[in-house]
Structure formats: C-alpha cells, structure tokens
Amino acid sequence: MATNKRGWHIPTVNVPRIRFGSGQEHQANPVMTYFLVIIPALMLSFFGLVMGFSAQTVTSIAEGENPYTAYARPLLIIVSSLVIAAIVQLIPQRALMTVAAPLFLFALVFQSLVITPLGRSEGGNANWVKMGPIMAQPSELLKLALVVFLAWIVAKSASKRSDLKAMSIAVVLPILVALGAVMLGRDMGTAMVVAMGALGAVWVAGLPKRWFGVLLMLAIPTLVLLVLSNPTRIRRVLAVLPGTSKGPDESAPEQIDHSLWALGSGGLTGLGPGASREKWNYLQAAHTDFIFAIVGEEFGLLGTFAVLLCLALLVWGMFRVAREAEDLFVVIAASGVGTWIGVQTVINVLSVTGVGPVIGVPLPLVSYGGSSFLFTITSVAVVASFARARAGMWMIGRPDEASAGRDPRVAPRRRSAR
Image 1: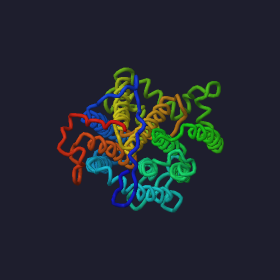
Image 2 (image 1 turned 90 degrees about the vertical axis):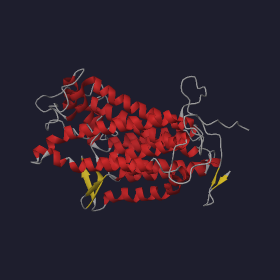
Image 3 (image 1 turned 120 degrees about the vertical axis):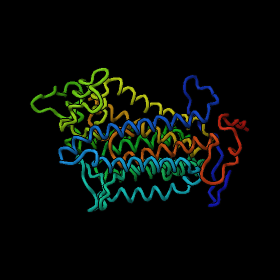
C-alpha cells in the first residue's frame, strides 16, 4: 500500500482492464493516446465556435443587436475555457485527488441554489443560477465533480470493494445525493446523463456485477414514475412510440418537425455555412440542444458524420486512457467522463433525429452554452492530464519518478504480477 502525506492508504491493486476485440494485451503508444483525446476535442471546439455563431446571429438580429459584437461575450467564454483546460491538463493526479471531496461538496451546494431566489427556469426546468451578470448551469459542474469523487473514494476504499455496506455508503449514497440535487430543478435529462456517467465510472471499479442488476431493477420503475409524473414527458415519449405518434402537422409544426426538415433539406453536402433556414426562429433551441440539426442543414450528411466521428474518437481515446492505466483512480475517472460524453451524445442525436424523445441535453463541445462547454472541456483536460502523465510529458510540479527522463514515445514496461 502507498500512503500519501494526508495518511490515506491507496492500495496497489490489479485494476480491471477494458478489453476490445480479442481482449489481448498490447502496448499502445502513450503519446498517440494523448493526442487522440486532445485533437478531436479541439476540432469539435472550433467547429462548435463556428456553428454557435452561425445559429446565434439570427437571435441577435431579431433583438436589434450587431451579431458580431453580440458574439464577443460567448467567444470570450469559449477562449477562456480553452485556456483553463490547457492549464488543467498540466495538473498532476495527486492534486486532483486532493480536491475531489471539496469539489463535490461545492458542486452540491452550487446545484442546490436552483431552488433559491437565485434559481432561473429555462425550458420548464429550474436548472440555472443567476448571480449578477453571470448565468450558470451548476449541474454541468456536478457531472465532473461526481465522477472525480467516485474515482477518489473507490480508489481509497479499494480493499473493501466486495463489502456491500461500505460501498453503499461510499458509492451509492453520493450518486443518490447528486441525482436528488439535479432533480431539485426537475431536469430529468441531465439526471440521466449524471446517472450513466456515474455508472460508467463504477462499472470498471471491480465491484460485484450482481449489484448492478439490483440497481437496474430499482432504476427502471423509478424512471417510469418520473415520466408518468409529468404530462410533458408523457407526451414526448408517446411521440416516438410506434402506434401513438402522429404525423407532422404542417399548420402547427412542432420542434422535432423543424429539426427533421432541417436535416432533410441538408442532403448529402448541405446548403452551405450560414445558409440554414430553420434557424430563422423556426427551430427552437437551434444554437443549443438542436445544433446538430443545423449542422445537418448547412453541412449535410457528411458534416453530421464528421461531427459524430470526432466525438467517437474522443470517447475512444478516453477509454484507451482507462484501458492502459495502472491506477484505479485514473481508470474510474477516465471511464466516467468517457461514458458521460458518449451517453450525452447519443441522447442528443436520438432527440434531434426523432428516434428518441426530446430530452434537453446539449451536444458535447458543439452546442452553444458557456457552462456546458466550460465543464465538458475541463473534463476532457482531466483525462488528458492522465494521458500526459503516462506519456512522460511535463506536468506542474516535480515530475513523477516513473516518468522522469523517459522517452514519451515508448510505452512504459508493465510490472509482472506477483
């Protein structure tokens, strides 16, 4: 066991491996893994910057503003977020573990502000907090904070992973508290993403798999009850079920009708950058939750495939970080962030294409939104910091003994199991 300055005992355990294909072990290039996380994230960020401006110009013009000056504030937020992410990727793992618990507690308190006078409603959900000129969505921070906290607490209690009582307190309780805090604002879509991110984090932690079956049996009726308790949710679910959905009413089209028209009119190559018609106050949330429809309209099927390919590479890179890691904290954190971004992408695309019910979650790194972009790119940077450390790249503080002076192009030799 390794003991840090605070006296925590972090067991050195055999971490469960995430296997692909035949499941055979292979030595991956750690530098390639790092760039597999960084490059797709940067491409999506810059593409989201362009698409956010394209979709937001209409709103600015309708409000009598200059679209270029109106976009200065979101541009500043995005650039600042990228600078923050660039710094976060240099932070060593031990610092992240130190702030895991305080960050989670702060995120819970921040999320609870949605039921105070500071809370604001958007789209029927009270999931925003307004403090002076700043409007933030605290649930985006809670996603990252919960994943990092679960990674820290499970790594700290790795020797008790088969103890149901200990793991219920260490894992299940924080997840339930986080979900309850999100549901204070009645934001079921975000709660689903938070739950799946947490599930992806603890799935690879080596917990007995029968526990997940019990959680599934409890989650399904809870999900059904939450849907039945809200008429809007019932209507959205019925809209996609076979035999209950109605065809588009051209005299009073709904949001999903405009989304499908946007995707259909884009064809293979799209109408061209900035040439979307549906963004002209026809498609609601065109620059946020339904930005994927505008991508399809302006860049066509090829454009949507390119975005999905970048997101797939990003998620793959994160799971590759988890697969090659030898530290339980890294495995859990990277898997949790990868699952969160992957599940959120799937939910958004299913909603925009009409395959699934409309659930208000943004497309990671592409949808317009300061809080979503800031904490998503920061989460990517956290995983990138793990990849940098393994590749032997420079980090803030004294270099790790295992990586100092090593050629980052060569994968570290694994220790033989005793």
